[in-house]
Amino acid sequence: MRDHGTRGGTDWAALRARFHLPDSIVYLDGNSLGPLPRAVPERVRRTVEDEWGEMLIRGWNEAGWMEWPARLGDRIGRLIGASGGATVVGDTLSIKVYQALDAALRLRPGRRVILSDSGNFPTDLYMAEGLIAALDRGHELRVVAPEAVAEAIDGDTAVLMLTQVDYRTGRLHDMADLTARAHAAGALTIWDLAHSAGALEIDVTGADADFAVGCTYKYLNAGPGAPAFVYVRPDLHDAIAPALSGWLGHAAPFAFDPSYRPGPGITRMRVGTPPVLQLAALEAALDIWDDVDMGDLRARSLALCDRFVGGVAARCPDLVPALPPGTARGSQVSFRHPEGYAVMQALIARGVIGDFRAPDILRFGFTPLFIGEAEVDAAVAAVADILETAAWDRPEYRTRKAVT
Image 1 (cartoon, rainbow, N blue to C red):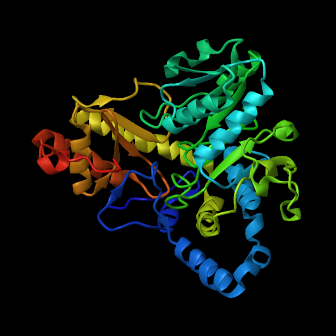
Image 2 (image 1 turned 180 degrees about the horizontal axis):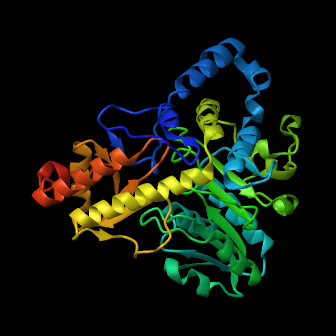
């Protein structure tokens, strides 16, 4: 099935070999959980046995655990177009959203509107609702359709908070354009990069983005529950006052001062103790990106997506694309089907793993690091056969599982 050649200067076959994937599986869900990089088990073993096991608490100094959030933050920063010292890793994405949103609102004290869209990932909206309730200062979360965002930015907007790639449909927002519109109206921006970091070229510096957040367990392949990252535009570092003033965001954590003093620069966006084992996995996963040209990656991603869309359109004309033709997308393709959940379960049973998003979305991620033309064609054939034969129409495929 494998057909991974060298195109555009990137050796896709060599990159594919750096991942563990079960035989006979077409894995189109790396946009939800990336597969295991082969180097991760040994790196985690070394952290567990050689560092934790032999160094014990000395590992914080001798193995450099305490510096990992900043060092790995810079490695992620390179992938999103950030300058050094502007990105830090730790905690969860929800926490990073909360931190960034609170910091942004404090910088716009005279404004009360948080503008977002209906394609934003729900946890971002939930965190906004919770923060609004906690502040109790009359803030409003205003949610519009994705295509209405540009016109909805106005003089009342304090913060524009968007997920760059819609988690359901794959719609790709123009970060530079919308950030410029927000700034022209006097607003700040927060970009959630969970579905774009590691999937396409990002330039937070060139776009003049104010804040960006993201997770590392999707396209960055750091494993389930891997920590999140946050970026803050460098000139804002000393102006932000963290709402979650954790001890590792303190200027001198081991002085154990009774009162909080924010640390310098991006350090103040740290909160709790670094998750060392997950950071070890992240470090090994990021090594792969040293050999990836993001321009090549994006070009191949779009080619694979187009191949899948074309194949499905030819064989499954009744399957409705979730995006209008010509709409910019990330590295995923989504279709609507009234029995989408059952169809996806039938596909998974055939070894083609995508996922389902309510109410009716079949979602497929295309990651050129381990997916090529042969996998795309196999997926098209499976989708077509399942729909043509109604193989999805079985009770076991309709039973909802906890994770869809």
